[in-house]
Each structure stands twice: as C-alpha cells, then as structure tokens.
Image (cartoon, rainbow, N blue to C red; front, side):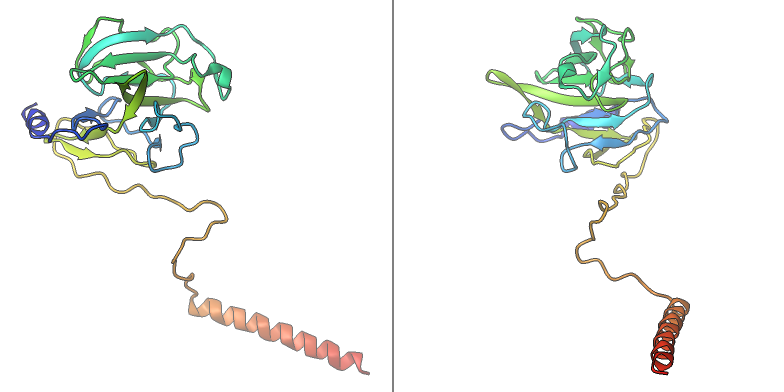
Length: 241
C-alpha cells in the first residue's frame, strides 16, 4: 500500500541498540481484536530476560490464525510439541515460527498449536501471510501468542521494541497492556484509545479524590448514627435504675 511504503520510507534511522522505526502489522486477521496481556511498561512476570524484554503477548483462543507482522524469510519452525503449562521444564518446548527481516532482525511467533504450522524454513512470506494457529504449547499459563523481535548482540539475542500500525493510511501505536485493536487495513481508522486500567486489589489510587456521597446517602448515614446514639443513651438510662 502506498501509505505504508511512504510511512516506512520517512521513518528516521534507529538509535544504537533499538529497533529500526519500521511498522508491524497486527499478527491476526482483519476484523478481529485481542487483548495485549503483557508488554513493556506493564506487569511482566515472564518477560524478564534481555531476549524477551520487549516481547508482546496477545491473549488468543486456540486455533486463531497467526499472521506475519512483517515480510521476511522463514528461518526456523517447530510444530511437534503438544504440552503446555507453567513448568520451567517446558521453556524450550513451545511450537514457533521464526522470520528474518530485511534488516537482519528476527520475529518469533511462539506457543503455536501442534501440527498446525503452515510454513517451513526458506519460505518467503509477506506481511499478513498465515504462519500457523495460536495455542498454549511450552511454558504458558494459557492460550496466547508470544510475539518478539530480536537481533544479535554478540553471543546472544536481545529483544527490540516494536511499533504496530493499523488502518490505511497507517496509524502507528506502541503496544500497551490492556489494549485491544480491531485489525483493519482497508480504511482509515482513529488512533487506539488508552486501555482502561484498574488498580490492583487493596491498592488505592494515589491522589484520587474521595468517593462522592449523595444527599440521600448522607441523610441515611446521619439517621443511623442518631439511632445508634439514642440506643446507647437508652441503655445507659435504664441500666441506672
């Protein structure tokens, strides 16, 4: 699409150690939306290594088509694993597809369903090409898609930040926990709204105003207090007799 090509052509050069300012398509079909359950800046109980720091998790039911977020060449696949649980023994047993991009970075699409990977090493894929179906294989608390872009940093891979886009012309946005964007690449769209975040249990919002009390509620509260005071006085009076 002309607008996407224009957006990429005008993107500034990346700073050292950061991902190029390219845009990534949402990795699921048009008309669908899935909540981002993990991303940088949110609560990341599993994205704690240099390899996964900028990874993004989409909460997805099993069998959801997983699409390439960016064009590239498939450099590896795994489709034989069947189990999945929060067990460290399964950390290296997730089904996945890995795609190398033109700039050398690599996208990993992990936790795919067994026997449902639809590409193989050497395939050239365009953005939007189906790679497999989402699942919950490997170390996973439930069905979701783990998406990460990495690059070599000496002897190890490190994760890179990503920017997604939606709409035509493209509207860029950063992944944020709680965000769910309906994929739409056929028409113009508005920028995604901020996700609605709720405080943790038993945690007050810092600087939040006190809850509002209606006039009726205040009267009921006053009546209850007066009744309670009257009862106490009555008990005291009769106890003296």
